[in-house]
Amino acid sequence: MGRKRTIDRGKVLDAAEAVVSKVGAAALTIDAVAKAAGITKGGVQYCFGTKGALIDAMLERWGEAYDAEVVQLTQGTPVSPIRAHLEATRKGDESSNAKAASLMSSLIQTPEHLASTRAWYKTRMADFDLSTEAGRRARIAFIATEGVFMLRFFGFMEIGEQDWNAVFDDIQSFVLTEE
Image (cartoon, rainbow, N blue to C red; front, side):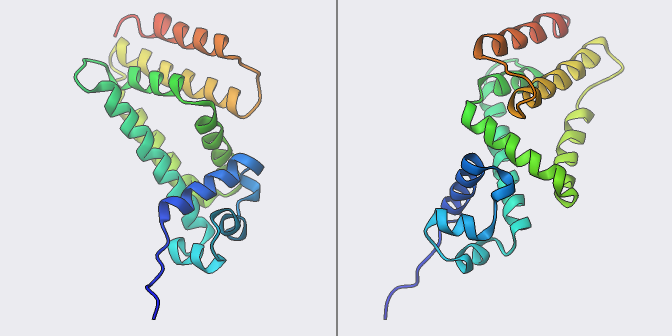
C-alpha cells in the first residue's frame, strides 16, 4: 500500500498565480490551475473547493504578504503605516504588482469577491485621523498611491521606473511633509 499523497496548498497557489501572470485572471480556472500545478482538477478542488475559494485564498495570501512587508518596513523605526504603505507599493516587484492588478481586475467582474477588498480598504481608511491635517494628508497619500498603482498595472498609463519613483518622491514630499 502506497503512502497517502498530499497536495501542497502553497504550490497550488503558486500555480494559480502563474496562470494569472501568464494568461490573465480571466483564464483562471480549476482546470488551468490543475495543469499548471501538475495535479488533477480534483486535487485543486480538494484544496480549495471552488474557484471562488481559490481566489479568496489568493487574495488572503497577497494581503498577508503585504502586511508582512509593512511590518518589516516599520519594525524598529518610527515609520508610520502610510509611509510603509508607500514604500511597500513603490518597492513591489513588477511581477508581483502585475499579478495583484490582474487578480484585482477579476474582482471587478465578480462582485462577490469584492467584500474582502472593500473591507481591506475600509480598514485602511479608518486608520486616518481626519480631524488633523496630517491625517488628511495621509489619506490623500494613500489614495494617490493606490491610483498610481492602478494606472500603471492596469495598463492605463505607461509609467517607467524613473517616473514611478518620481511620483512616489512627490507623494512623500508634497503630501506627507507635515506628518
